[in-house]
Length: 90
Image (cartoon, rainbow, N blue to C red; front, side, top):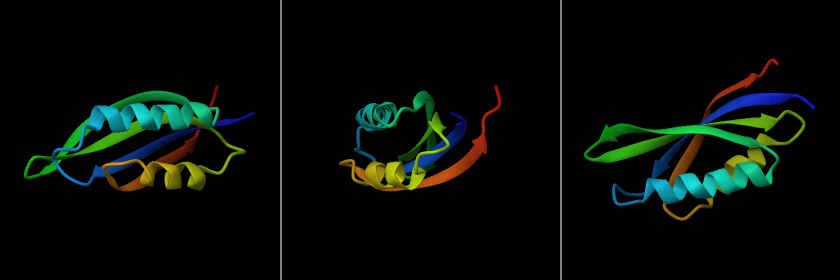
């Protein structure tokens, strides 16, 4: 079973969105899909709005689009975009 290294950029609906809660929900979704959550970081956008960039390992044989759709359904998430997807070696 091969794994891929994946990064998603998540944009919240407002600056008041609790990104820590969003991160925890994403972590649960990734682990439920047999992935391994690696890290997250906040990136400033504008006017106090911050994006959340999450990194994780995900099984190659599973559909990443299903996970992306699930992330978009999280309360407080405006949109998400996969910004990196590559085969992990080792």
